[in-house]
Figure (tube, rainbow, N blue to C red):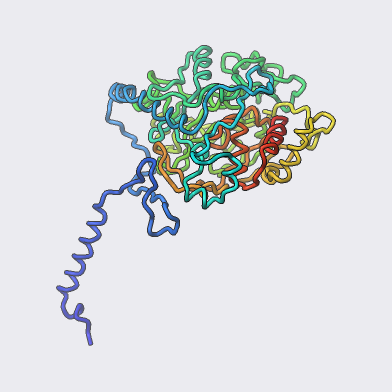
Length: 494
Protein backbone atom coordinates (compact mmCIF):
# COMPACT_ATOMS: atom_id res chain seq x y z
CA UNK A 1 0.00 0.00 0.00
CA UNK A 2 1.40 3.41 -0.94
CA UNK A 3 1.98 5.99 1.79
CA UNK A 4 -0.63 8.72 2.13
CA UNK A 5 2.22 11.26 1.93
CA UNK A 6 3.12 9.91 -1.51
CA UNK A 7 -0.47 9.98 -2.76
CA UNK A 8 -1.22 13.39 -1.24
CA UNK A 9 1.64 15.83 -2.06
CA UNK A 10 0.01 18.66 -0.11
CA UNK A 11 0.70 16.68 3.09
CA UNK A 12 4.41 16.62 2.25
CA UNK A 13 4.44 20.38 1.74
CA UNK A 14 2.55 20.96 4.99
CA UNK A 15 4.97 18.80 6.97
CA UNK A 16 7.94 20.57 5.40
CA UNK A 17 6.50 23.99 6.27
CA UNK A 18 5.93 22.98 9.89
CA UNK A 19 9.52 21.70 10.14
CA UNK A 20 10.99 24.88 8.71
CA UNK A 21 8.93 26.99 11.08
CA UNK A 22 10.23 25.00 14.04
CA UNK A 23 13.82 25.46 12.88
CA UNK A 24 13.33 29.21 12.44
CA UNK A 25 11.76 29.47 15.90
CA UNK A 26 14.74 27.67 17.41
CA UNK A 27 17.26 29.89 15.64
CA UNK A 28 15.38 33.00 16.72
CA UNK A 29 15.78 32.19 20.39
CA UNK A 30 18.40 34.43 22.05
CA UNK A 31 21.64 32.64 22.90
CA UNK A 32 22.08 33.10 26.64
CA UNK A 33 25.63 32.83 27.98
CA UNK A 34 26.42 31.88 31.57
CA UNK A 35 25.51 34.44 34.22
CA UNK A 36 28.36 36.22 35.97
CA UNK A 37 29.47 34.29 39.06
CA UNK A 38 26.62 31.77 38.84
CA UNK A 39 26.57 28.11 37.88
CA UNK A 40 25.71 28.05 34.17
CA UNK A 41 22.98 26.02 32.56
CA UNK A 42 23.61 22.38 31.74
CA UNK A 43 24.34 21.26 28.20
CA UNK A 44 21.96 18.32 27.55
CA UNK A 45 24.49 16.89 25.07
CA UNK A 46 27.25 16.79 27.67
CA UNK A 47 27.03 14.47 30.68
CA UNK A 48 28.97 16.81 32.95
CA UNK A 49 26.74 18.88 35.21
CA UNK A 50 27.13 22.61 34.74
CA UNK A 51 28.94 22.42 31.42
CA UNK A 52 29.07 25.86 29.84
CA UNK A 53 27.74 25.90 26.28
CA UNK A 54 30.04 27.73 23.92
CA UNK A 55 28.48 30.72 22.21
CA UNK A 56 27.78 30.25 18.53
CA UNK A 57 27.58 32.82 15.80
CA UNK A 58 30.69 34.73 16.95
CA UNK A 59 33.32 35.04 14.24
CA UNK A 60 36.89 33.87 14.69
CA UNK A 61 37.98 37.19 13.16
CA UNK A 62 38.06 40.61 14.79
CA UNK A 63 36.22 43.42 12.99
CA UNK A 64 38.59 45.07 10.50
CA UNK A 65 36.64 48.25 9.83
CA UNK A 66 36.02 50.37 12.92
CA UNK A 67 33.52 53.13 12.23
CA UNK A 68 33.75 54.85 15.62
CA UNK A 69 36.24 57.70 15.88
CA UNK A 70 39.28 57.45 18.14
CA UNK A 71 38.09 60.40 20.24
CA UNK A 72 34.77 58.65 20.86
CA UNK A 73 36.46 55.37 21.83
CA UNK A 74 38.94 57.19 24.06
CA UNK A 75 36.33 59.26 25.90
CA UNK A 76 34.08 56.27 26.55
CA UNK A 77 36.86 53.98 27.81
CA UNK A 78 38.48 56.62 30.01
CA UNK A 79 35.12 57.15 31.71
CA UNK A 80 34.75 53.39 32.27
CA UNK A 81 38.32 52.84 33.53
CA UNK A 82 37.70 53.48 37.25
CA UNK A 83 34.83 50.97 37.30
CA UNK A 84 36.91 48.39 35.40
CA UNK A 85 39.80 48.69 37.85
CA UNK A 86 37.53 48.71 40.91
CA UNK A 87 35.92 45.46 39.77
CA UNK A 88 39.30 43.75 39.36
CA UNK A 89 40.56 45.15 42.66
CA UNK A 90 37.52 43.71 44.41
CA UNK A 91 38.20 40.31 42.83
CA UNK A 92 41.83 40.35 44.01
CA UNK A 93 40.87 41.36 47.55
CA UNK A 94 38.23 38.60 47.71
CA UNK A 95 40.85 36.05 46.64
CA UNK A 96 44.07 37.15 48.29
CA UNK A 97 45.83 38.90 51.11
CA UNK A 98 47.63 41.47 48.96
CA UNK A 99 49.50 43.24 51.76
CA UNK A 100 53.26 43.79 51.51
CA UNK A 101 54.94 41.11 53.69
CA UNK A 102 58.60 40.52 52.76
CA UNK A 103 60.12 37.15 53.61
CA UNK A 104 61.27 37.17 57.24
CA UNK A 105 64.14 34.80 56.47
CA UNK A 106 65.64 37.48 54.23
CA UNK A 107 65.24 35.62 50.93
CA UNK A 108 65.75 38.03 48.05
CA UNK A 109 65.68 37.87 44.28
CA UNK A 110 68.94 36.81 42.65
CA UNK A 111 71.50 39.63 42.60
CA UNK A 112 68.90 42.18 43.67
CA UNK A 113 68.02 43.82 46.97
CA UNK A 114 64.28 43.24 46.63
CA UNK A 115 62.89 40.60 49.06
CA UNK A 116 60.43 37.99 47.86
CA UNK A 117 56.96 37.93 49.42
CA UNK A 118 56.14 35.29 52.01
CA UNK A 119 53.09 33.44 53.21
CA UNK A 120 49.97 31.85 51.83
CA UNK A 121 48.05 34.69 50.21
CA UNK A 122 45.10 32.73 48.82
CA UNK A 123 42.21 32.95 51.28
CA UNK A 124 40.65 29.80 52.70
CA UNK A 125 36.93 29.36 51.98
CA UNK A 126 34.57 30.23 54.84
CA UNK A 127 33.88 27.27 57.09
CA UNK A 128 37.23 25.57 56.45
CA UNK A 129 39.55 25.68 59.44
CA UNK A 130 42.91 24.92 57.81
CA UNK A 131 44.60 24.00 54.56
CA UNK A 132 45.15 20.52 55.94
CA UNK A 133 41.41 20.17 56.54
CA UNK A 134 40.70 21.22 52.96
CA UNK A 135 43.33 18.85 51.54
CA UNK A 136 41.70 15.94 53.39
CA UNK A 137 38.50 16.39 51.35
CA UNK A 138 37.87 14.65 48.04
CA UNK A 139 37.57 16.68 44.81
CA UNK A 140 33.88 15.79 44.62
CA UNK A 141 33.24 16.98 48.17
CA UNK A 142 35.03 20.26 47.51
CA UNK A 143 33.09 20.76 44.27
CA UNK A 144 29.67 19.93 45.73
CA UNK A 145 30.22 22.17 48.77
CA UNK A 146 31.78 24.91 46.61
CA UNK A 147 34.89 25.02 48.81
CA UNK A 148 37.55 25.40 46.13
CA UNK A 149 39.54 28.53 47.08
CA UNK A 150 38.75 31.47 44.78
CA UNK A 151 42.46 32.17 44.45
CA UNK A 152 42.94 28.75 42.84
CA UNK A 153 40.40 29.52 40.11
CA UNK A 154 41.60 30.94 36.77
CA UNK A 155 42.57 34.59 36.99
CA UNK A 156 40.83 36.79 34.41
CA UNK A 157 42.36 39.69 32.54
CA UNK A 158 41.85 43.12 34.11
CA UNK A 159 39.14 43.60 31.47
CA UNK A 160 38.65 40.17 29.97
CA UNK A 161 36.20 41.11 27.19
CA UNK A 162 38.72 43.73 26.03
CA UNK A 163 41.99 41.83 26.62
CA UNK A 164 45.36 42.85 25.24
CA UNK A 165 48.89 43.43 26.54
CA UNK A 166 49.23 45.12 29.94
CA UNK A 167 52.57 46.28 31.36
CA UNK A 168 53.50 46.98 35.00
CA UNK A 169 54.18 50.57 35.99
CA UNK A 170 57.90 49.96 36.61
CA UNK A 171 58.40 48.88 32.98
CA UNK A 172 56.27 51.73 31.64
CA UNK A 173 58.30 54.35 33.53
CA UNK A 174 61.71 53.03 32.50
CA UNK A 175 60.86 52.63 28.80
CA UNK A 176 59.38 56.13 28.74
CA UNK A 177 62.50 57.49 30.45
CA UNK A 178 64.95 55.77 28.09
CA UNK A 179 63.12 55.72 24.77
CA UNK A 180 60.17 58.10 25.05
CA UNK A 181 57.75 55.28 24.21
CA UNK A 182 54.60 55.10 26.32
CA UNK A 183 53.40 51.56 27.14
CA UNK A 184 50.49 52.76 29.28
CA UNK A 185 46.90 52.15 28.21
CA UNK A 186 44.14 54.70 28.61
CA UNK A 187 41.50 52.06 29.31
CA UNK A 188 43.09 50.07 32.16
CA UNK A 189 46.15 49.56 34.37
CA UNK A 190 48.17 46.63 35.69
CA UNK A 191 46.37 44.88 38.54
CA UNK A 192 48.77 42.85 40.76
CA UNK A 193 50.67 45.00 43.32
CA UNK A 194 54.33 45.58 42.46
CA UNK A 195 55.68 43.90 45.60
CA UNK A 196 54.52 40.55 44.17
CA UNK A 197 56.34 41.08 40.86
CA UNK A 198 59.88 40.03 39.89
CA UNK A 199 62.79 42.29 40.79
CA UNK A 200 63.21 45.03 38.18
CA UNK A 201 65.27 45.19 36.15
CA UNK A 202 66.20 41.51 36.42
CA UNK A 203 69.81 40.31 36.04
CA UNK A 204 71.04 38.64 32.85
CA UNK A 205 73.19 35.51 32.93
CA UNK A 206 74.78 34.09 29.76
CA UNK A 207 75.60 30.42 29.16
CA UNK A 208 78.67 31.54 27.20
CA UNK A 209 80.08 33.89 29.86
CA UNK A 210 79.17 32.60 33.34
CA UNK A 211 82.33 34.28 34.62
CA UNK A 212 80.70 37.70 34.16
CA UNK A 213 77.70 37.10 36.44
CA UNK A 214 74.98 39.68 35.80
CA UNK A 215 75.90 41.32 32.48
CA UNK A 216 73.05 43.86 32.68
CA UNK A 217 75.00 45.90 35.26
CA UNK A 218 71.70 46.54 37.04
CA UNK A 219 70.17 48.28 34.00
CA UNK A 220 67.11 47.59 31.86
CA UNK A 221 68.57 46.73 28.47
CA UNK A 222 67.03 48.81 25.67
CA UNK A 223 67.96 50.07 22.23
CA UNK A 224 69.63 52.98 23.99
CA UNK A 225 72.25 50.96 25.84
CA UNK A 226 72.49 47.40 24.48
CA UNK A 227 75.54 48.07 22.32
CA UNK A 228 77.63 49.58 25.09
CA UNK A 229 76.63 46.74 27.45
CA UNK A 230 77.22 43.82 25.06
CA UNK A 231 79.81 44.91 22.51
CA UNK A 232 82.81 42.62 23.02
CA UNK A 233 80.68 40.01 24.84
CA UNK A 234 78.37 38.87 22.02
CA UNK A 235 79.15 37.92 18.44
CA UNK A 236 77.87 40.20 15.62
CA UNK A 237 74.97 37.82 14.95
CA UNK A 238 73.99 37.72 18.62
CA UNK A 239 74.19 41.51 18.87
CA UNK A 240 71.89 41.83 15.87
CA UNK A 241 69.46 39.34 17.43
CA UNK A 242 69.41 41.36 20.65
CA UNK A 243 68.81 44.55 18.65
CA UNK A 244 65.76 42.99 17.01
CA UNK A 245 64.44 41.73 20.35
CA UNK A 246 64.59 45.35 21.57
CA UNK A 247 62.97 46.84 18.45
CA UNK A 248 59.30 47.90 18.80
CA UNK A 249 56.83 46.82 16.13
CA UNK A 250 53.06 47.46 15.86
CA UNK A 251 50.84 45.36 18.11
CA UNK A 252 47.08 45.06 18.65
CA UNK A 253 46.82 47.73 21.37
CA UNK A 254 49.93 49.77 20.51
CA UNK A 255 49.87 51.01 16.90
CA UNK A 256 48.70 53.94 14.78
CA UNK A 257 45.06 52.96 14.07
CA UNK A 258 41.93 54.48 15.60
CA UNK A 259 41.20 51.31 17.58
CA UNK A 260 44.49 51.36 19.48
CA UNK A 261 44.56 51.55 23.29
CA UNK A 262 47.43 54.02 23.66
CA UNK A 263 46.56 57.70 23.85
CA UNK A 264 48.92 58.63 21.04
CA UNK A 265 49.87 56.65 17.93
CA UNK A 266 52.52 54.13 18.97
CA UNK A 267 55.56 52.52 17.38
CA UNK A 268 54.44 49.31 19.07
CA UNK A 269 56.05 46.92 21.53
CA UNK A 270 59.31 44.95 21.61
CA UNK A 271 59.84 41.32 22.64
CA UNK A 272 61.86 42.49 25.62
CA UNK A 273 59.10 44.86 26.80
CA UNK A 274 57.44 41.77 28.30
CA UNK A 275 60.57 39.63 28.63
CA UNK A 276 62.52 42.36 30.41
CA UNK A 277 66.25 41.56 30.20
CA UNK A 278 65.31 38.18 28.76
CA UNK A 279 63.43 37.26 31.94
CA UNK A 280 59.94 38.55 32.80
CA UNK A 281 58.35 41.65 34.29
CA UNK A 282 54.99 39.84 34.77
CA UNK A 283 53.34 41.66 31.86
CA UNK A 284 50.30 39.72 30.69
CA UNK A 285 47.79 39.40 27.87
CA UNK A 286 45.35 36.80 26.53
CA UNK A 287 46.42 33.75 24.54
CA UNK A 288 45.88 34.22 20.83
CA UNK A 289 44.96 30.66 19.92
CA UNK A 290 41.59 30.15 21.62
CA UNK A 291 38.11 31.37 20.65
CA UNK A 292 35.67 32.75 21.70
CA UNK A 293 36.93 35.59 23.89
CA UNK A 294 35.60 34.37 27.24
CA UNK A 295 37.50 31.08 26.84
CA UNK A 296 40.83 32.78 26.16
CA UNK A 297 43.28 32.49 29.04
CA UNK A 298 45.26 35.20 30.74
CA UNK A 299 48.91 34.39 30.22
CA UNK A 300 51.66 35.63 32.50
CA UNK A 301 54.90 36.29 30.61
CA UNK A 302 57.23 33.31 31.18
CA UNK A 303 60.95 33.77 31.63
CA UNK A 304 63.26 33.13 28.67
CA UNK A 305 65.97 31.85 30.98
CA UNK A 306 66.90 28.31 30.03
CA UNK A 307 64.98 28.47 26.77
CA UNK A 308 67.80 26.41 25.20
CA UNK A 309 66.59 23.29 27.07
CA UNK A 310 62.94 23.71 26.04
CA UNK A 311 61.23 22.44 22.92
CA UNK A 312 57.58 23.36 23.41
CA UNK A 313 56.36 26.93 22.99
CA UNK A 314 53.12 28.90 22.68
CA UNK A 315 50.10 28.72 24.98
CA UNK A 316 48.94 25.48 23.32
CA UNK A 317 52.55 24.30 22.85
CA UNK A 318 52.04 23.87 19.12
CA UNK A 319 55.43 25.44 18.35
CA UNK A 320 58.48 23.23 18.51
CA UNK A 321 61.43 25.65 18.48
CA UNK A 322 62.19 29.11 19.78
CA UNK A 323 62.58 30.12 16.12
CA UNK A 324 58.98 29.03 15.46
CA UNK A 325 57.81 30.97 18.47
CA UNK A 326 59.76 34.12 17.58
CA UNK A 327 58.30 34.13 14.08
CA UNK A 328 54.76 33.33 15.23
CA UNK A 329 54.70 36.08 17.86
CA UNK A 330 55.03 38.92 15.37
CA UNK A 331 52.93 37.31 12.66
CA UNK A 332 49.90 36.54 14.82
CA UNK A 333 50.28 36.61 18.61
CA UNK A 334 50.95 40.36 18.57
CA UNK A 335 47.49 40.73 17.03
CA UNK A 336 45.52 38.41 19.30
CA UNK A 337 46.09 35.52 16.90
CA UNK A 338 44.45 37.34 13.97
CA UNK A 339 46.91 37.94 11.10
CA UNK A 340 44.17 39.74 9.16
CA UNK A 341 44.26 42.49 11.78
CA UNK A 342 48.04 42.38 11.55
CA UNK A 343 47.83 43.52 7.94
CA UNK A 344 45.82 46.51 9.09
CA UNK A 345 47.93 47.50 12.08
CA UNK A 346 51.41 46.76 10.76
CA UNK A 347 52.42 43.10 10.71
CA UNK A 348 56.16 42.50 10.95
CA UNK A 349 57.18 39.47 8.91
CA UNK A 350 60.65 38.41 9.99
CA UNK A 351 63.08 36.74 7.61
CA UNK A 352 63.68 33.23 8.94
CA UNK A 353 67.22 32.55 7.81
CA UNK A 354 68.67 35.78 9.16
CA UNK A 355 66.50 37.81 11.55
CA UNK A 356 64.69 34.94 13.28
CA UNK A 357 67.87 32.91 13.52
CA UNK A 358 69.82 35.79 15.09
CA UNK A 359 67.03 36.52 17.60
CA UNK A 360 66.89 32.86 18.58
CA UNK A 361 70.66 32.66 18.89
CA UNK A 362 70.65 35.34 21.56
CA UNK A 363 67.64 33.89 23.39
CA UNK A 364 69.38 30.52 23.63
CA UNK A 365 72.23 32.17 25.57
CA UNK A 366 69.99 33.22 28.48
CA UNK A 367 70.93 31.14 31.50
CA UNK A 368 69.32 30.35 34.83
CA UNK A 369 70.66 32.26 37.85
CA UNK A 370 73.56 30.64 39.72
CA UNK A 371 72.58 27.98 42.28
CA UNK A 372 75.74 27.38 44.30
CA UNK A 373 74.13 24.75 46.50
CA UNK A 374 73.40 22.43 43.56
CA UNK A 375 75.81 19.85 42.14
CA UNK A 376 76.33 18.97 38.45
CA UNK A 377 73.20 16.80 38.53
CA UNK A 378 71.03 19.60 39.91
CA UNK A 379 70.78 18.09 43.40
CA UNK A 380 71.82 19.63 46.70
CA UNK A 381 75.42 19.34 47.84
CA UNK A 382 74.82 17.88 51.33
CA UNK A 383 77.66 19.79 52.96
CA UNK A 384 76.21 23.09 51.75
CA UNK A 385 72.54 22.45 52.57
CA UNK A 386 70.53 22.75 55.77
CA UNK A 387 68.61 19.85 57.22
CA UNK A 388 65.33 21.52 56.20
CA UNK A 389 66.55 21.91 52.59
CA UNK A 390 67.64 18.27 52.43
CA UNK A 391 64.28 17.12 53.82
CA UNK A 392 62.59 19.35 51.24
CA UNK A 393 64.58 17.76 48.43
CA UNK A 394 63.55 14.29 49.61
CA UNK A 395 59.92 15.42 49.62
CA UNK A 396 60.25 17.03 46.17
CA UNK A 397 61.40 13.76 44.62
CA UNK A 398 59.28 11.60 46.92
CA UNK A 399 56.01 12.18 48.74
CA UNK A 400 55.24 15.58 47.16
CA UNK A 401 55.69 14.07 43.65
CA UNK A 402 57.04 17.34 42.23
CA UNK A 403 59.97 15.54 40.60
CA UNK A 404 57.71 13.42 38.40
CA UNK A 405 57.05 16.46 36.19
CA UNK A 406 60.05 18.56 37.26
CA UNK A 407 63.10 16.25 37.18
CA UNK A 408 66.61 17.57 37.78
CA UNK A 409 68.80 19.19 36.56
CA UNK A 410 66.55 21.77 34.85
CA UNK A 411 63.45 20.74 36.77
CA UNK A 412 61.19 20.24 33.76
CA UNK A 413 60.25 17.15 31.79
CA UNK A 414 59.83 19.26 28.64
CA UNK A 415 56.26 18.17 28.08
CA UNK A 416 52.67 19.01 29.09
CA UNK A 417 50.25 17.76 31.73
CA UNK A 418 46.54 18.19 32.36
CA UNK A 419 46.09 18.97 36.05
CA UNK A 420 42.30 18.47 35.74
CA UNK A 421 41.70 21.36 38.14
CA UNK A 422 38.04 21.55 37.11
CA UNK A 423 37.39 18.39 39.19
CA UNK A 424 37.18 20.75 42.17
CA UNK A 425 34.59 23.29 41.02
CA UNK A 426 31.54 23.86 38.87
CA UNK A 427 32.17 25.92 35.73
CA UNK A 428 31.41 29.60 36.15
CA UNK A 429 31.96 33.03 34.66
CA UNK A 430 34.50 35.22 36.49
CA UNK A 431 34.68 38.84 35.33
CA UNK A 432 34.10 37.81 31.74
CA UNK A 433 36.33 34.71 31.89
CA UNK A 434 34.87 31.20 31.67
CA UNK A 435 36.41 29.02 34.37
CA UNK A 436 36.19 25.40 33.22
CA UNK A 437 38.47 22.63 32.00
CA UNK A 438 41.71 23.99 30.53
CA UNK A 439 43.52 20.94 29.22
CA UNK A 440 47.27 20.34 29.34
CA UNK A 441 49.75 23.07 30.25
CA UNK A 442 53.50 23.19 29.86
CA UNK A 443 55.85 22.02 32.60
CA UNK A 444 57.91 25.15 33.17
CA UNK A 445 61.48 24.82 34.52
CA UNK A 446 61.78 25.39 38.26
CA UNK A 447 65.41 26.48 38.18
CA UNK A 448 65.47 29.98 39.66
CA UNK A 449 61.77 29.70 40.51
CA UNK A 450 61.87 32.25 43.34
CA UNK A 451 62.73 34.92 40.73
CA UNK A 452 59.57 34.41 38.67
CA UNK A 453 56.39 35.30 40.60
CA UNK A 454 53.46 35.21 40.18
CA UNK A 455 53.02 31.51 39.41
CA UNK A 456 51.07 29.12 37.15
CA UNK A 457 50.40 30.05 33.54
CA UNK A 458 47.99 32.87 34.37
CA UNK A 459 49.68 34.23 37.50
CA UNK A 460 46.87 33.16 39.85
CA UNK A 461 49.34 32.08 42.57
CA UNK A 462 51.16 35.03 44.14
CA UNK A 463 53.77 33.23 46.26
CA UNK A 464 55.66 29.95 46.46
CA UNK A 465 53.57 29.08 49.52
CA UNK A 466 50.41 29.50 47.44
CA UNK A 467 51.91 27.25 44.80
CA UNK A 468 52.73 24.52 47.32
CA UNK A 469 49.18 24.59 48.71
CA UNK A 470 47.71 24.50 45.18
CA UNK A 471 49.64 21.42 44.12
CA UNK A 472 49.21 19.72 47.50
CA UNK A 473 45.46 19.92 46.91
CA UNK A 474 45.46 19.15 43.17
CA UNK A 475 47.87 16.21 43.39
CA UNK A 476 46.45 14.94 46.69
CA UNK A 477 49.76 14.52 48.53
CA UNK A 478 48.48 15.71 51.94
CA UNK A 479 51.70 17.28 53.16
CA UNK A 480 51.94 18.42 56.77
CA UNK A 481 52.76 22.02 57.73
CA UNK A 482 56.31 20.98 58.56
CA UNK A 483 56.72 19.19 55.22
CA UNK A 484 55.45 22.25 53.33
CA UNK A 485 58.00 24.43 55.13
CA UNK A 486 60.80 22.03 54.18
CA UNK A 487 59.64 21.92 50.55
CA UNK A 488 59.63 25.72 50.45
CA UNK A 489 63.19 25.80 51.80
CA UNK A 490 64.31 23.49 48.97
CA UNK A 491 62.54 25.49 46.23
CA UNK A 492 64.41 28.60 47.31
CA UNK A 493 67.74 26.85 46.62
CA UNK A 494 66.91 26.20 42.99
